[in-house]
Image 1 (spheres, rainbow, N blue to C red):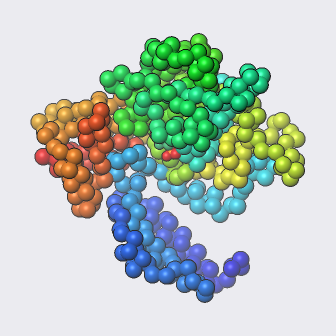
Image 2: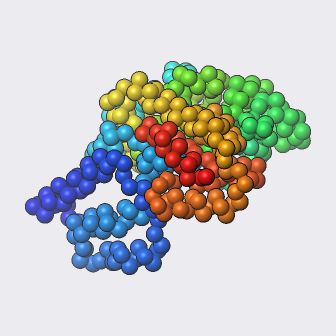
Image 3: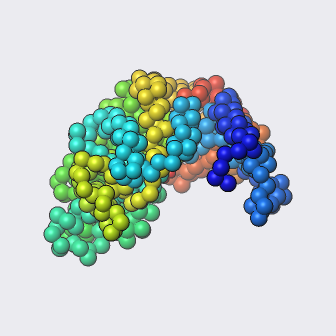
Length: 455
Ligand SMILES: *Cc1c(COP(=O)(O)O)cnc(C)c1O
C-alpha cells in the first residue's frame, strides 16, 4: 500500500490523466444530484476487505459519482456563490496534496506558510491594512468569522481586566449578515443583535447608533464586536464601512468585515471606492474559493493586530510548546480555531505568482461588467424587473406575475435540461430570482438565454 510498483504506475497515469482532463473540460457538464437509492445501486459496494482496485474506484467516481455533483465552475452555475478556479490554482492543489506539508507551524511548514503569507499580504494591501497585519487561510468564511470573533471577544475581556470574564458577549451585525455570524455566536454562546438595513439592504452607521442607544446600559457593555458585510450573500450589498468603523470607534469595540464573497472586488478599481473604511477593520475575511479563482476550501483571514489573535488562539501543550520559541516564526495555527492544517493558501499563491495580480484585476472587472450588462437586459425586458440593482456581481430580479411554484418549476427544468443552475431566493418575503457571476467565462449571452427562457 505504501510502495510504488507497476500497478500503482498505471493508476498514477490514470489519476493524473483524469485530473488534467477535468481541468480542461470547456465547459464541464453541469450535472446534477441523484437520489441516494439510485447512487447506491449504480455505485455498488466500494469499500470491501479486499479492495476493488484504484482503476475501478476511479471508474465509479468518473461514471457515477462525479456526475452526481454539480460543476460549480460551469459558466451557467449562477446560484449561491459559484467558483471559477484557475487552471494553475487547480494544478497546484494537486501539488499541495502530493507534498505532505503540515502547514500549522513554521518549524514544519515554514516554506509553505511564507508563500501563503505573500498571498495574504496582497489581500492586506488591497484592503489598506497596515504592515503588521497578518493572518491565516482557514477552510471558509464560516471558520474565518468564528475565529475573528473569538479574537474580538478575547480582546474585549482582556481589555476589561477580568470584569467581563463571565459576561455573555454580544455581537452587533447587519441585517444582511451571513448565517455564519449567528452560527459563530451560537458556538461562542454569545448574542447577536441585528441592525436594520435601508431599503437597498445596506447597514449605516446611524442605524447602528439607533440600535445601540435603544439598548439597556448593561447590554451595551456586552458588545464586543460589530460585523459589517462587504457584499451580502443574497444581494451583494456593501454596508457603510466607514460609518461602521466610526461606530466601533465611539463604542471602543472590534470592527470585523465579512467580505467572504465581495472582498474579492477590492481588486477591481471600478468599485474599490465602495469599500472605503475597510482599512480600519480589526479583522477581515475573503474567500478565495468564491471570487478569487481558487479551489475549495479557502478563506483568507486577516487581523490588524495579529498578536491579539495569537493570544486568543494559540494552543498550549507539553508537546507543542517547542514551537513557541521564536517570535519571528509565523505559526499559522495560532491565528484561528484549528491546529493541523493544509497549506490551502498555496493554490491562490501559485495562481497569483503565475498570472500576476493584473490578471486578477481584469478577471474581477470582467465579471462585474457581465453582471451589470445582465442587469441592463433585465431593465430593457418586459417580463423581468430588477429588485436589487447589482452593486457587485449579484442581481436580484423578478419574473412578473410568477408564483413561487412557477419559479421552482422553471429552476428545476433548467437544471434537468442542463441549461443553467439558477435557484430562487427571497427578498422582503417575496420569492424572486438571483444571479451571482464570479466566473469570467460567464457571458452576457449566457444571461440573455436564461432570461429568454423565463418568458
Ligand atoms: C459564503 C459566505 C460566508 C461563508 O463562507 P463559507 O466559505 O461557505 O463558510 C460568510 N459570509 C459571507 C458574506 C458569505 O458570502
